[in-house]
Length: 104
Image 1: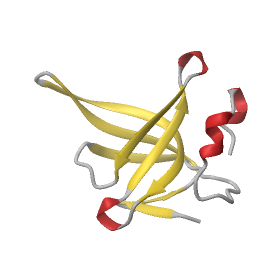
Image 2: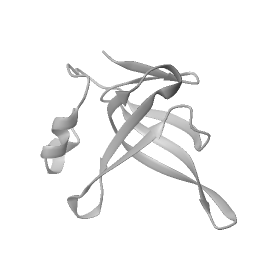
Image 3: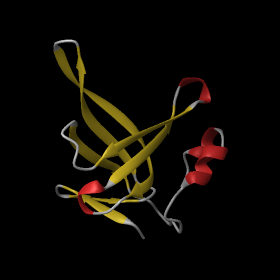
Image 4: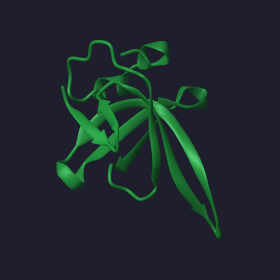
C-alpha cells in the first residue's frame, strides 16, 4: 500500500481527508477546508504530491492537487481510514456517480 507522511500524520490511499490550506485573496488570507478521498500519491521525497477528490454540488467531481511540502498546507486531518484498498491509484472513482463514488 502506498503511504506518505505529512508531519505526524500517516496518509494512505483511500483515506477520507480534511485538507486545510491557506488562500490569499487580495490582501486578505484565510484558511479553506477541502474534504475528500485521497485517490493518488505521486512523486518521491520532497516532490511528493497528493490528489484529493470529492463530489461537489450537482454531482460534479472536484479534484485538487497539492505538493506535500507546500507552504499553503496548514493541516491535514484523517477523518476516516480506508478499509480494504487494493489499488495504488483510485482513478476508477472518476467514472462512478452518486454514493458509489464516495465508497472505497
